[in-house]
Image (cartoon, rainbow, N blue to C red; front, side, top):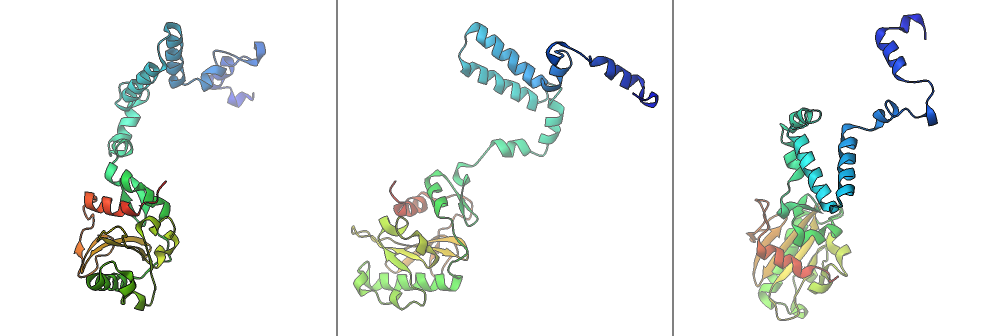
Length: 251
C-alpha cells in the first residue's frame, strides 16, 4: 500500500482483514458483510423454534411483530428511516385496499371480485364511437319497446351502419367477446325482459340495460334518454353487478 494511503482508517481496515484464514473464511469479518441485523434476528428465531419444537406459524407471527416494530421505529436501526418514509401515507396505501375497486378490468375501470372476470376481456382501441354507441342503444330501445324480445320483428337494429352481434346471455362473452368492438346485444330466452347492450366505446367499457322502451346506463357514457346508473362514486350497486354477471361465461 502506498505511503499516501496509509491513513489510520485504512490501516485499521487492513488489520481487520486477515490475509490468511482456514478455508478462506473469516467468521468475524467475512460473514459480517452478508449477515445483516435482519438475518441474525430471523436466524435466532429459527434456532429457538427448532429447539422448542413450536409450530412454524408462530415464527411468522413473531416476524410480523418484528416488522411492525421496524415500521414504527421500535428497532432504531431501521425504524426512523421507515417512519420518515411513511409520513406521506405510503405504507397505508400499500397495505390497504378497497375490495369494491381492487381489480383492474381494463378501460380505466376497477371493480370488486364479483366482476374481476371482466379483466379477461379488457377493452381494445378498436371500438365504437360515442355516436355509434348512442345509435345502437337507441335502436335496441326502439325495437324492445315495440317488439320486446321477439327478434324476428326487430327493425331498427338491422338498419344500423355498424351491425352489433345479437345473441343469448350465455354466449355474449363465451362466444362473442371479439365482437364487443361493434357491440353485443344480449337478449334473454327464458322469458326475461332485461336486454343488455355490452360494448367497447372509445376503448372503454359500456353496459346498458334495456327493458321495454326504458334503459339505464350502468357503465360508460350515459346515453339519452337512459337513466344514469353508473358508479360515479366508485361503488357498484348490487343491481349492476348481478345484471352484468348474467353475461359471465360458465367455467
